[in-house]
Amino acid sequence: MPDKSTEIARILRKNQTESEEIFWKLTRKRGLLGKRILRQHPILFSYFGRKRFFVADFYCPEKRLIIELDGKIHEFQKDYDELRTYIIQQLGYRVVRVANQEVSDIDKLIENLRLYLE
Image 1 (cartoon, rainbow, N blue to C red):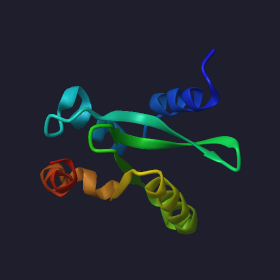
Image 2: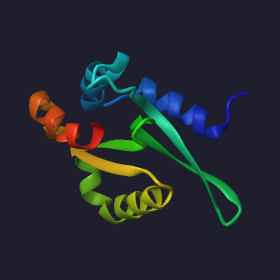
Image 3: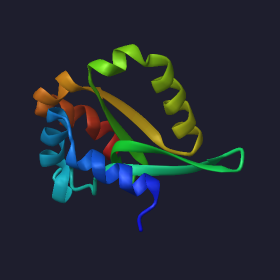
Image 4: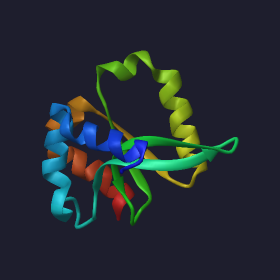
């Protein structure tokens, strides 16, 4: 039986936002600069001896890069997002936040992500 993080990641994969679907079509099968990108990938860590996790929207294991697509909800949870980003960075990952609107200009988005992926 899958653990909770895997279960939640599977649910999120089945219920992607429109921006996530567009981005996934671009990135799957090494479509983004030849890099392997995983979607809805659990990031596991321990906090005061308890197992915890975040589910990254997209993750490039080769570069330890997390790409978060931020929709309207993120306007109301900035403090949470900043704390989450801080924790993830302390775990040795880099985090790039992309507004959903940026996904509509794929060429510009690819150029921006190139800085992190090459």
